Length: 287
Image (cartoon, rainbow, N blue to C red):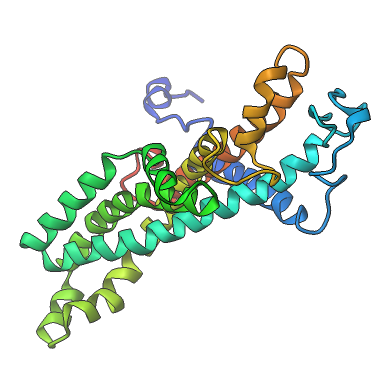
């Protein structure tokens, strides 16, 4: 039996790391990070804030799984609690950004005209200030802390979700069921609640997943600069900042929180990309 070599050559190759692989790998990593964060609420190997000067700068496996820092605190316990702190700040900031951004975006799509122009230009102005600059300005006014980080990250995400919501909502307004609802006398606000939001919720959720990874990274940067959680609350970014003095003597102080940030961000990014490629019919990864 002969084999058509040309047909085999023309057949599209499935990518090794396709959307399903990214989706499941991202979900596994994300669930692992969330599990560690939740576990830290009820158990850690040691107290993350307890000073043990006799055990300072001990390498991994000699005094704890990831070693100890300059004050003898268990690094792995700090990583666990830092996971909860980072995830909670990221989740709250993303939730706030979604709430305000989607409200603005759906309003722009519903009203169009000058209303849309004003909202989009407002988003351009807000988007021109990175989260770091916003945090510095807010800290100068009200002081640093978790609330400062949440507001700064949320402000950065408002224009992101406003643009995504507006872009997703505009095609829905042109569909037959929305035209029928308008002909039946439904107002724009009611149509938005009944028809627009349910149809764009999936796209918003996918974008929120991706932005959560970015929020974790930004929160680590703010903590590194002392603009997020105040000591002694464990924070991945501040652990990286504290490790600078001891990089030559105790590199594990930087490696552990650095790996934690990288793994968390990677997990959310892979999960968001996998969800987008799986459920977006126009995604190239589905070819």
